[in-house]
Amino acid sequence: MEKDKKVAMKGKKSAAPQPAVKEKVKYTNKQRCLVLASRGVNYRTRHLMKDLESLMPHYKPDVKLDIKKGLAEITDIAEMKSCTYSIFFETRRHTDVYMWISRIPNGPSVRFLLQNVHTTEELKMTGNCLMGSRPLLLFDKQFDSAPELQLIKALFKEVFAVPLGHPKSKPFVDHVMSFFVVDGKIWIRNYQISEKGLTEHDAEKFAKRGEEPSLTEIGPRMVLEIIRIFDDSFTGKTLYENPNYVSPTAARSMEKKKNSGSYAKRMKALERLEQRREEMILPEDELADVFQ
Image 1 (cartoon, rainbow, N blue to C red):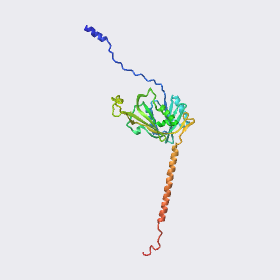
Image 2: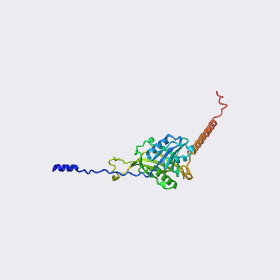
Image 3: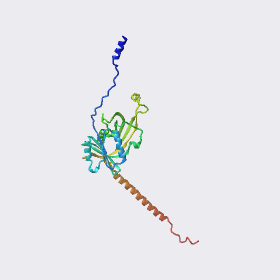
Image 4: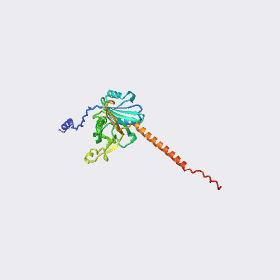
C-alpha cells in the first residue's frame, strides 16, 4: 500500500505558481524627430545634439545641411525618413546659433535664438537618468497666457515627449524636463527625480511614508528667445514676430558704438587735461637771475 501511494504521489504534478506575463504596450504613436545642423556648427552645439539624442529615443540624425540650398530641403529629408517633426540648428557667423522646430510637412515652424547653452559634460551635475526613459514635461503657467506660447507649448509636447511603447524607450519615468518663461525667453532645464534618503528596496514604501522626492539637475541647459513663427514648415507667412527681439549683429553693433563713444570721451578728457597742465605752467620771471 505504501508503495502504491508513493507511485501515485510521483504521478501528480506540483501546482507551482506561474509568473505573471506582462502585456506588451502597442507602439501606435510612431512619431519621429529629425535633428540636423548646418555647416560650420560649433562644438557646443554638437554636444547639445548628443545630449538630445540620449534623451530622445525617437531621435533621427542626418548629415550637415548647406543652408545656401534653402531650408525647404529639410522637409523632403524628414519625409524620406518618415519623421513627423524636425529640429534644425542654424549657425551664422560661426557664433550665432538659431534653433528651428517644425512640424512636418505642413508646419507650423518656430525660429529661436539659442543662448546660454551648457551641455551635460560641461556642467558635471550629480543627477542621472536612464537613457531613453520617458520624461515628465513641466510647463510654466505663462505658456497659457498668450496664443504664440500655447502653440510653442504644443510643439514642445510633441517633440520632447517620448512615444509610449517606443522600441528604444525604457518603461520608466525618472526625469523632468521643465520649460519656464522668464523675461520673454524660454528657459529649459532637465532634472532627475531622486528619492532622497531611500534605497531601491524601500521605493515601494515611498508613497506610504508621505516623503516628497527631490530634484537633481542633470543637464543640458539652454535659453530660447522667440524670433518668428511661420505657418508652414521652415517657410510661409508670419504668424507671430517678436517685437522685442534684437539680432546678435545689431546688439554687437550697439555695443561697439557704445564703446567707441566712451573712447572718444576718454580722448577729449585727455585733451582737456593737457590744456589745464599747459595753463598751470608759470611764465619765466625776468628778475629771477638778479641775485645770482
